[in-house]
Length: 297
Image (cartoon, rainbow, N blue to C red; front, side, top):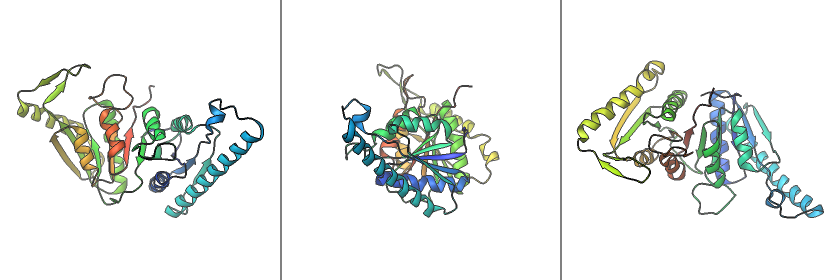
C-alpha cells in the first residue's frame, strides 16, 4: 500500500456510522503506528448552491454548522483516544463540502475510512451518498464501515479475479491478515455463463470441468509467492462456481474484513465501481476495503 503521507484519514459527521468508522480507523492507525487524521467538511447547502442567504442569517447558519462540526470532531477524537490513548491525532474542519474534501484528502492518506451511513440523506439508504461518491473517486484504498459488526476473531477475505485491481487487493489483504494475526480466505468465484458484450449477450460454456481446472490454475498463480512473503498467514482457498458477489457477501458474515478491487473483469470499461464492489459496500456484514488502481507514473 503506497501513499504520500503516513496517516489514516477518517471522515466524520456525528452519526452512528461515523462513530464506528472512527473506532475502526483508530484501531488501524494504532496497529500500523500511523497518525490518525479526523476530518469534517462544513456544508451549508444555501451557501454552496446559491440559496440566497446573506448577512446575519448566513452568518448564524454557518456558526451553527461550525459548532456541530466542532462537536462531531471532538467526539471523534475522544472515541479514538479510548482505542489508544497514545495515538497521534490531528483534526481539520475545512470549509468545503464533504465529498470533494474527502476525495482531496485521499490524495495524501494511506487509507480513507468512512461510515456506511451518515446524516446526509434518507434514513433507509443502505449506502450514504458521501460514502458512495468517495469510494468511486478516491485516490487511495477506502474502507467502508458498518455501524455494528462483531467478528474481531474472523479472517480477512479477499476477492480474486486476476484483474489489476484484484492483484493490488491481494497485496493489501495479505498485509492486513498479517498485521491482524488471522487467516486469509482467498475467494475466486466463477460460473459457466460469460457475457460477451454490453448488450448482455450470453454464452453457455459446455465444459465446466475444463473451465474449473483453468480457474483453479488462475487462483494458484495469483497466490504464488505470497505465502513466502507472509509465512505467518494461513491461506484458505475458496474456489466456487457462483457469482463473486454472492460468495463474498456470504464470506462477510464471518470475516472481520473483506478486501476487493474497485472494478474487476466483470465491469464495463469506464465504470468507476464494479458490480461486486458495489454490492459489498451496500450489503456486506463486515467492513469492506475497496482498493483503487495505482496512480499513473
